[in-house]
Image (cartoon, rainbow over all chains, first blue to last red; front, side, top):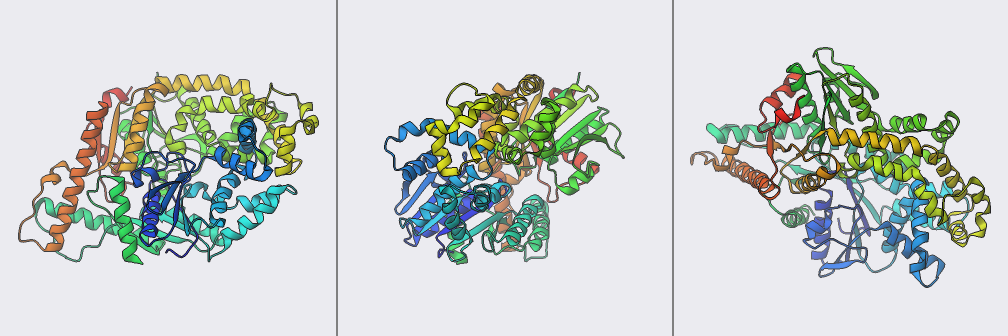
Length: 281
Length: 343
């Protein structure tokens, strides 16, 4: 679980992607690894799980050895341009970055390569043992992962093309990169996870993903039902377990995380998931 | 006049099922009702009597007064071009490789298409009640901001940024090598990509007048609609619901209620199991009590802090997938402000 250089955590919205990402980052930190956690989407929940204020583009140390950042595409682009063009005075590029970003709205893969490129660049530099990404939801993750390949098809010349090649290699390398799909044992998240698994197998853009089922209820061993309200609770629990199993059987997941009862804060959730991942190791 | 109810909320909270259940309840009360939904689960779609994507509302075979439409956002985007551009340009746009990219990259475009289509149904005056299950893009808020964003997109903002000046004519792009900024773009992206994109954007701009006019009509529909926010008591959806509750008064109307889905019976919070029951079952009882308490706290905090009307829909182990189940779900709900929602 901790031997990859890059773990990209995706899943349908609302399944607990940010919680699992932060749990994994805390696990790595606990084992003394230098970790960078990246919040890829605006409004992502990573900062809440670390209990920090809003994250920024510049990585900030949120625990000893654990840094976290928020992806800002225009900042990533400015950084890229200043590195590529080796020109001073980044401020002058503000207008250009806006123009470039506007262009990227209409050009396939250009927008995504800026984001995924920044992440892959952080992996390539030796500052981190592991980069953990709270990534785009499964509906959009494919367009990020295939961006390097799409750029190679779309752009015949230009500097970005040669860079796209090492990016595609890093993503496809099973020793360095792991895609982790978080799901819930419910109909729509399961369907989306299966679609993503099928897409990965068909394209080979990344190696086989790890599937994590979140909020899984423990089956009831006892066969009796107590009277009264307690009985209603046990009956609901059993029915939910049956419903969950219908969807778990279709996957099946590589890891399962338990339903967390009565927890209040995102920070508590992250700490619990980190403990649960430790137990699964 | 047609009453419109916009059901907002983050993905995964049961918003689609709730919208469907509301529609069944209204239809059974004799209100001619259309429910407009995006990406429903397969079994729910068939319960509503729609099995294919398509923009045309279908009457339900077994339920008089119930109609359903399932939006295909990709087809709708194409419809935007067809509706607002000259036929020649519309065809060129629809075939353009960048058109698809733009519709994927501009998250509000799906929402725009959905809002446009939903507004069309409202304006048709063929139903007494139109219930819209809003698409989840942008955390769900895109549906409400899309008309303005779309007008901005096709209005030449992109072109102005690319050129750094006023709107260019088509000839501009053939002289582009003269401009240092564009030369830099050429170095990085290769030489002809910029020109291909720019020509596409010029075509897209020809839809501006139509899109802007339509955007104002859509905004009128939004401002006359009732809104509901659906959430669960989990922290992430509640945070989204707070965002909706604060923003909707400006974008549409103050939500008539915040609906907490998957609610447990309130009396479970204080349940004390018989001392004699097996330890495992006692533990399960404690867990669900704690969960019930947490849910109640989340609701109380929402209404205390934001002055929201709070409603609940009970947790069903199996999501309802037929008309009877949907009707039962609504009958078991509590606090839904029906008088504000029905025509």
